[in-house]
Image (tube, rainbow, N blue to C red):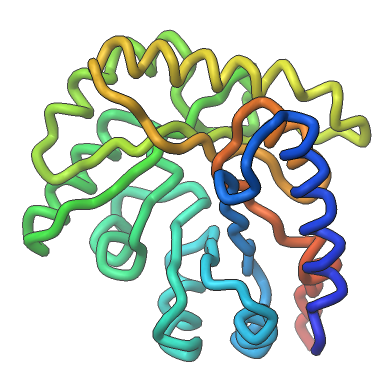
Length: 232
């Protein structure tokens, strides 16, 4: 499948948002979300020039990554259970969805066993949606020093999933709040955090305008996700 037209359309939107925000296009990384997509679709995206991919489930990633080009980079972007941390540390170069101090400690323990340092993003549930995981803004600031003290963890920034809406402008305040939280975290840590992972297919333009450095795009690249086939 030729994904180039889809990617070109996404690129137009990225460049337009960067232009409105007065940002350099190089400050935004496009991560292709491959949940439910077969290795053949990953290959098509790689053929179109993409190198950064994200998976929502560890088990799906384990089955898929080895069947994709070795040069590709992979991030864990979905909810991570503690019993999947060992595999997550092994298969991914970054875990974006660290949503609690306890999970950070588990990742740190497995990274120590693997003798590697694990870059992470701290997931924030900005508006407190019951259906979503993540630190509350208050808990994030309370636990930040403890997460930062873990020897095998490197905090690279924050991540959020905005509430779903057909009107992207409605979630701009969520992205703005995450940017403000990043600034507060930087003050606590006394160091800069390079990444804000926010924005998906329907809302990545206001996310870019509010400072996103990583956007997670699936449907706009691959089209509607394949539906699971009913059991016979």
